[in-house]
Length: 426
Image (tube, rainbow, N blue to C red):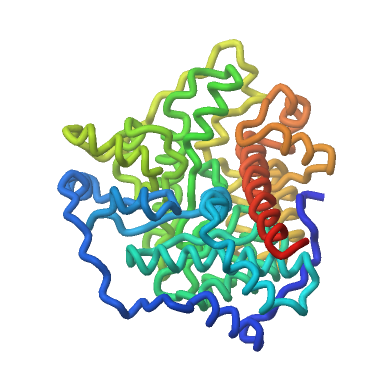
């Protein structure tokens, strides 16, 4: 069983009476018709955009930190379960929790906590929209990651709160891809998150046409360095540019909204220069601040650059196949072609199609014990614990990193949920 969370979730249906009350509750006191403050002129960032055309986002939910950097060249913010948890743990929303609990008092406790977490998430995102008037990527509760119907329900409700600015973040899982396909047909903007390879983003684009796909590139560099496979330099950057190429070529000339590539999980300003020309860069505030201090740097598009990656000669490249991060093979292309001609009806059918097209490591299953191992490993897995599984060919570096990323978000969500339980006496 791949799922790390409780299946068969119950949840409020959109447009129900309680749901409409939740929308009113979340929007209370926030008027998006008010004229926002005029942002300062970002002269350095203006030069960057003029040179390479990359859209610039900040990867933060911290209003004060964003305020220090925000300028007229930034047009988006990304949040996630971890970033939201940091904001909730400050206590700013503690008084809101009992009110939400009273509104939802008829629900079982587990469902109530999930609904309150949703309320806090979209309330904070709405505050960001109100302050900065930009697109805000809003991540859903991690319980939903392996449940297509629950994802659809919460994504539609998220969109309903702020359709002009919210972009719903849905992770790269089979269930997520099926949900994204439906949401995009409904005109809802979706950011397909937790991507770690060009092939993952190629498949997501071909099968579901998300508004955005991601490469968490900083974590890839750490994966290679921390596990002694090489120095880690430019692994994530090479992967991101390869993914940009695959996504751009696939969507070129198609009569639909173009899927855009996001470079995410940056560690320092040097990486910005290596990623110049990518559709979107979302950067932590500390990286943006560092870049401004080094504002004499001239950015030039790197989209035609084939970054050289150093892998130690002693590494067993069949077991630890780093090239899967940036290569899209004939097998993935065949899978995409067949799935486009005969779209899978659900996640299980998508998993089956991947196996039948000789890509079993794209959507692998994990046992309960293996999930525990993922949780213990943190954001960057210890690969020596996964050697046998990687050697079998039904797990790969990108799919393992996807699981690890999901695990870290689950941990943050548990901490947020625990705070909610504390304030409702559960």
